[in-house]
Every structure is written in structure tokens, then in C-alpha cells.
Length: 373
Image (cartoon, rainbow, N blue to C red):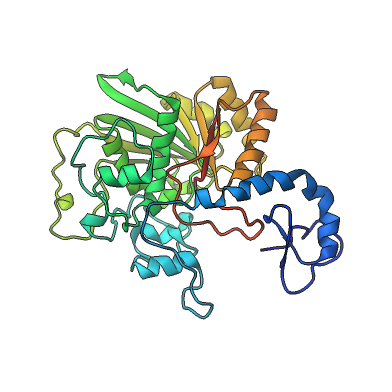
């Protein structure tokens, strides 16, 4: 952890790191008593709130999975927990698992964003074919989803599936009813600020199982979209393949009952408020979602939130930790003058690997908290 007063005080931090925890919340640490005393005028307002977040630490770590992510020894080849975890599964730097650690490629260096369509694990560990039973009326936990998809709890698939399952959860929260267009069920979604999920688009094929017979059109809008890919259309009409050569997922023949199901992405480089008028010519959304948005950290969200508020389309944001969600809620309230329609809540489909965070000791997981306006 870094000293919470770093950069806010004139005196440089003492050597030895930030070993002195705040006794009130335990979420921040300091390099010295002097820095802690100086920082109290800033920390005093947030201390009790951070303490309440920390009390939910155990709740956020509750997952049904039997795989574990341990910290490697300091002299291990893979010093980062994510790299160590992926290597233990023989998935490090393979397929769309590449972007799950710091060793992964930059998005702008990838020639084809849809090229990685392999799970690189056996068919019993991933959803590579149609589900055996129709999707239940509502899936509310990872355990529900794994049971429906007949996956064992030692399968690491949830590490990647948190993207489509979080989108599913937001759709369920909005109680969205698909509209009829050209005789087909169609669902149009504006997805803001994509980053590493741009290298994992194949996992969104699972939306075909979650919404059988529905055509999903998803506009991926954000500055991380490579300039050379701006305007590109990518169609996902099958599930990501497993590593078993004899599995039927390798067949090119699609199932008759889901022949109309597909997920179509259109890439848009830039900020949403800058591209909104262009996007609207092609796609009026039923839902807007911004995963891991960091609303409080980026002032550029302000004009985007103003547009979302004007059009009145259901919009959902997620963030890594409860404090980030709280700060985002305050920002949205100050911009719109209205409270959140969907209050801050734990996302049941958050990624089951903690996010490294050197500034706070708050429990952080990708897509951890969800809230909507």
C-alpha cells in the first residue's frame, strides 16, 4: 500500500513503505504518524464510510468456486497473482486469457479483435455448446449459472464470463422488454468505455444462450478502440470453442432453434458524447452500460451523463469497489440533480479475482458494484 498522504504533503514519505494503518477504518495506511496527523483533515470525512465498506470485505469474497488465487512466492517466475493463477491452469498468455494479466498485449497492437475464440480448456469446463435446458427465468448467482450450464465449480470460466453475465444482470435490473423490429426480437445496447474486453469478444457469445432467438446489437464506444478499427462490425454467431478436438462445438452447423440468435458489435472510437449523434443514426439504445466506469476519476463523464439523462434511456454503471461507486453516485447526483434509480448494490456476477489496488485496502473486484440512473 502507498501512504495515503503521498503527494498531498510537502514532506517526502519515510522509507519502509506505508505500514501504519488507520485505526478507525483500516482502509488506508501511512508511512509515519506525522503524515497520518496531517492527512486527518482530509480523511476524517471518509473514515466512517470506508470502515463500513471494510466490514463488507468478507461478503465480497464469498464465491462458490473451488479454485483459488494464491499469491506466489517473492522469488517465483510469475510474481503477480493473476499471472501465477493463469500459469497454474496452463492458460497464461493463451487465447483471450492473454489480457487477464499485465503480460497481455496492448489493444492497439492486435490486428484482429475477434481473432481469439478459444477457451483453451476442456468442454466440461466451459460453455462451448448450447445449454442442455432452457435458460431459467432468472439467474441470480454464479452458482445458479454454473448449475444451469452444467459446469463444475473448479472451472475458471467465470474469470472471463463476468463481462456477459454483468450485462445480463443489468438487463434484468432494468426489466427490459425487447422490442419487435422486422419480425425479429432485437436488443440494442450502447456499451461505454470497453478496454480489455475488446480482446475477449468471443465470450459475449454466451449472450446467445441467455437470450435465445434474440439479435443483440452492441455499440462498443470508447477511446481504447483502435483508430484503425473505428466503424468495424464484428458478428458473434457461435460460442467460443473448447480445446477438445472431437467436441461438437467445432462443427460449422448452427442449431436450428437458435439460428436467429447472434451478437453483433460495432466499434466506435471516442467518447460517447462526442459520437452520440453519429451512433444514433444507426442505433437507438434500449440500454446503456458502462462497466468499471470510474465516473469520479474522469471529468469527461460529465457531458456523457448529461446526454444519458436527457434521453432517458436506462443506464447502468459498475465499478471496482464500493467507495468508487459511492463517489460516482455523488457525481451523477450533482450532474442530474436526481438520486440513482437503482441504488448501489453488489454485482453477483463480479469477477472472482481481486483487483490489485495499492492506494486502499478496500475489497476490489472487476464489475464489483452496480448502480443505475
